[in-house]
Picture (cartoon, rainbow, N blue to C red):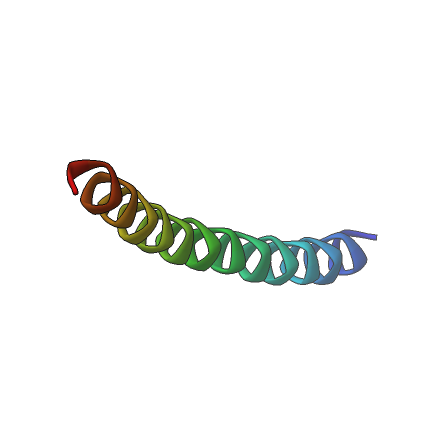
Length: 47
């Protein structure tokens, strides 16, 4: 039973790691997009 638990935990760890990596990538690109949009809005308002 312990062997099954270890395999299950390893699979869960891999799935969680992929989800975390996807989330970090989304936050990174979302931050970049937000900065660009904010800069464009500031430029449009300043004119």
